[in-house]
Length: 457
Image 1 (cartoon, rainbow, N blue to C red):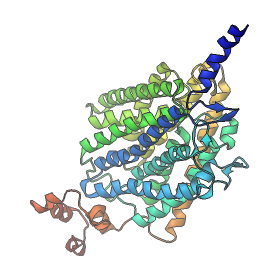
Image 2 (tube, one colour):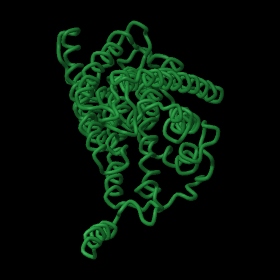
Image 3 (cartoon, one colour):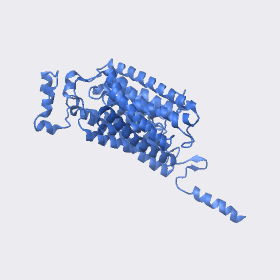
């Protein structure tokens, strides 16, 4: 009898003695493995915003590369402070009416080393901060090369406070979409649809760039864009796998399907472009990969590998059509295709989650339409619709409010000179001006530039 008791108790006591065990005396404790994993994932997600800056920076004209990169970096600085002061508590504080978080964590009061699940509350807060950063930064792709810096600073503060934090609470913080059962593993609605729709609205309100449709506005440095895309792909593993909030099998599954969808998106965009345009381009390949990453984001923790490949194969042509055909037909100037890739790709990803989600992948999720649960698709459509309406209307009102106090876009002269010099007093390629004066020649050749503006260069 004593030997039987030892046989049962000794392995149990050994298990309980392992450092970082997730439960002690019925209370959650910090797991060191999960904590290490999420710290790394938070760092991976952080590098995505500088990666986005390079991705966007290579696609603008050379006179606007620094100003475009600056928009993403100032987002990192401003949104980080907002998140610590009140953004986090509005998103993840105790639910108030299923609409917003309470003020319990104001100024990060009560956020410390205590467990949040199996990781310290601090690292959960920091991990979620990185999502807020890139969401706001994505919007800059729609207004690049023409938005005034003071107006953009005001926009950052208002949009992060009034749009991102409430929407984050709706989906992840215990709000009404979460209660409804909408599935969004890593940010299809919260990050990509919201930023893509906001970018489209901003592009419409601010208007087209000078010369749009009549002057060439091709990427000035494709290798920079490819480097940015590579950093995005790299960081996206933290974005999606880290959303499991533990170093476990679900994180591994999310990692695998993330890569497969990105690869499929790159292939399908290239094929669609090749058939339509006649040539397979490098820009198309990296754009398709990013579109694949966007589309798999809401589904990453709910779908198996083959559905993930299908999601990527569909999103490539879908986003290519939005960028190459719809945008030119309708005439809006979504400069770097924030809406065409993130808005459209995120919408497809959210809908596809309602089609392909399976409890065999994640018991905490739900079965989608193809697994016998058609109601989940309806729930996903409600989530998409709510995000589009809320983000679109709120962005419009925020921009109109800012416009009452300051101009939203730079002057015609500043735009013709380029925002690097006219707004920030910097030149990314200063050597070109030293050896041959190419910057000055470019400015003089630009139509409609006043002589007084040329003298300031």
